[in-house]
Image (cartoon, rainbow, N blue to C red; front, side):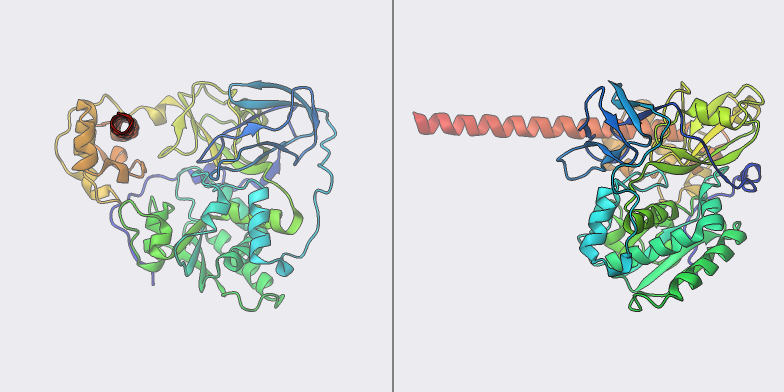
Length: 459
């Protein structure tokens, strides 16, 4: 039995453009630009020097900060320069792996701690777009009993996870078993929306094959659940409720509901890391939209430019009005095409004006459609108005702006064509800045009080 989450919408999914395109491996580019910050947490710092020769899979950046994900070279070649927070590597054309990679090992014989270390060493992050370091998520500070693999891929146009499950379900299934072993859960579910029947069938076959080995008999049977299609089903809190009926408290994390959610692509990368010692140097990315000549699902190296990926798909059939990193609901418009594909790049979407044009923004008419559509139970209309007024404190304290997941449902249904999510994003940024300022003031007051106290003692 599945639970229907509050709100949500049914936008045209546009998946017909690329869902029939098998995964193609794009040749390694001549130059890759690998950002030092591809994860939630502290940016990494280079551990290689300009002019140094590196090999694919070699660690090139790290940090001593706890919340981070190490970064590895996606090609072999020479480190040309450090530029705009990234390491630029010129390929030598050999594509040679670092010494000892890939390696073959039996993950079933590895302990929980060894598996977790392998995930950390591989620099794996949440590949659905959140980019939270996987090793941190797999060591929750509260008991969890349910693992959910997110194969919903509810964002319109994106089909990378669909093709991954259909073509390489074995990697996902083995990754799911590794995750279940690390977490010690009682239940493991692969959640797929019912508009992907081929993926569901492929995953059932892959799970059956993985469990037929008989290894690690103590692991739970992996369920494959087909959920009614509804955006934003793939958002963690919505997916947790749909599968378990549990609600993540406002301001809380999935572990507060006894769950851990990982994307199916993350699970596949975890299998590669644990079974073959491979760090995260490539990913599957959808390149789609009505402005792309031949939409495709590409296996592409981290650091490849958007321009190179688009060119590999035949370039633009029409001049795009917008090129988005991600899908149309939560993606972000790009000003340039020389930006690199990162660990969290699930899609590149190029749309013409006929799809992006939605008319002029008008005043809110208080119709309440955004309230009905909001899966978090917020009042987006008021949040947008407070955002325009720059009333940051009220948006935070009275209307819970920080609980917004920026899914875009409110903007989609608004008859006044208000850019609600943009106002909310700006307000959330202002809230963070305000919190930092308040923290600094508190620290200054504390320091002043301490200095005064010390002065008294000295006197």
